Image (cartoon, rainbow, N blue to C red):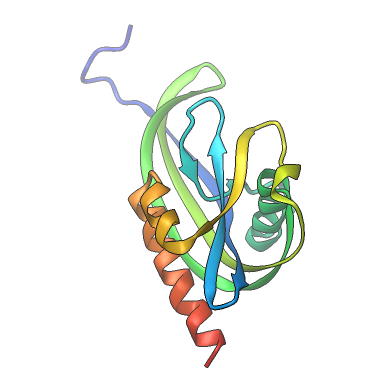
Length: 153
């Protein structure tokens, strides 16, 4: 058993994800996923695989978790945070960096998500900002909406 003053191992983790959007008339909708087993609404994201760029990983994760194909329109931002978890039997601190990309919907159906996701759905931006559990993801969506607004200019 670790004592309180014993240092935890630190692991770095790099992920990528996307704010996938579509426009219905003047409304902007984004794709959200309900994670399993936590049952929390969040943006699709996941680990960057070896040999993959952050953008490639983000496109893959959106396709796998939200079931849709998208076109990348640019990087939104990067978030980082810390949490404690077990990795390979070792409890440690995880320093996670997530690269976020703006992605325009091109095809596919949100019901075609993978087994890691309980549900994926299109949600109006205002509703998404209420549903998203993590503050940093709400901020990413707000930045994405500003980027979409500039596309129309």
